[in-house]
Length: 324
Length: 269
Image (cartoon, rainbow over all chains, first blue to last red; front, side):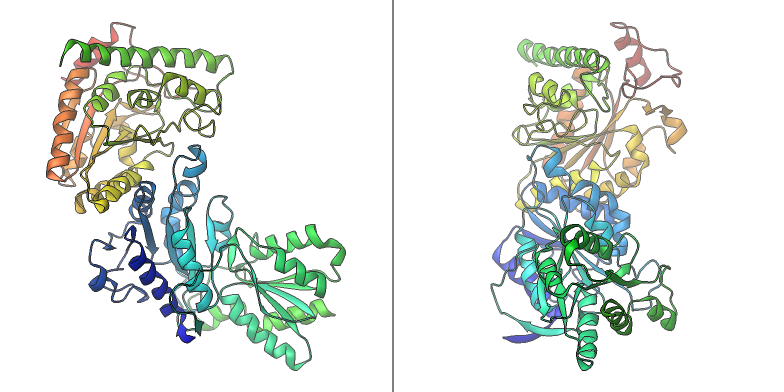
């Protein structure tokens, strides 16, 4: 298996699906001539042409709204939002139109749409460009929300998302495009809505996804030095949420820490811990702790920004706390 | 147009009127819930417009959609069943008054977020352009929708990408209870199309044949030129914005049944 970057894995999935199905096309800001602001679609414009790689005006309502319409009449558009922060400009389409149309019209309409968006902090982009608002989008029934933490998962899940007959929000992390991992070449599909054990362990369960996976794996290495074996469950999909591996792990370890990059209040950790309490209360040996972003708009200053984001030592400390 | 065709247009308008009058009664009796916006007074607009389309041309509209549904060929029974929340309704009772649709009849929905369906209309046309056909998407909306951002993003995209959309503004003088001149920088809505380099025309919406002729010409232009076009159709709703409208805002007198048509068509001249 080839070891490639997250960027290459995403790019590969897009390229393969476009070659496979002529109904698939890409639209978004600077996806064509520029090659994508994160270079994910570099080379696509020359190969597939302007009909299939569409540069749009900077108009998020037009981008997502038009993608929904094209999807309704049988195409399979992939709409790129330059960052997830710009989804707020098109919030009506992302949460109020795309996820509702199939159900609200009695199953007559299908919206086979993928919205790709980059999120996450750590690049000193300031408060409005650095958010990790994944939980907001996962709140809405009818919208699948996928956020991979490894190149392998990115490829397999994106290919499945493109073949899905329902809208999928595919969240990428701005600081993870250079992450390398082994990725199967060619046809490789992973089911949406399946969590995965990324590291086996017996002492504590760490539930996380995306950037949190990278941090949690490092924390687990630290903890292993002290003889603590953490089991890491990667959610990979926030909706539909697959709790089975989480509950299985928790019934073994009886202790959990949930790691997410977004804010703690009303977040992924709140949802996951609540479900553990509801479904595995008898196995709880310690309060479940959450590691998340500090409750402030993310600052520009590098030191302040890093202080506000969850870090490896925060995870190590939380694990030690639940093991007390 | 032959006598048979003329009678059919008349039949459609009367059918819409009667279905909605019955709907209003059922609403007042508590059998129909939610918001219900009647098309009474505006029947000639959608009747003349949709008579001018080919079956392959798509229709998408806002929440005042009962008449449009009937003009598209959805039966009065299905419309009424949807109003009553029945599984036999157009949307299996999941949508209600504001969300009638039929893929089979090429009616792509009543949409309830003001202006929200305009970019989707551009998308329907984009899907057709991508597929390489020359279907026309007819997108209907009220004067109020032309003040929201969606309108401008949708028209800009349609013109820039040469999408086959016929934009149809039903100017019924009020966005809910706010008169056009109190909410829009220009009260002649068609002027907004000028800003996007889009051909346009203002039409008397109280005259079903005038609407038909203008629509025929406009659809033909959109199909053969491969460019969007905008019609502003002057009309007036005789009832409130929705069933719960106190109607305190009207400066024009409330129309008298049967005499309303003439007096309101004068507004457009």
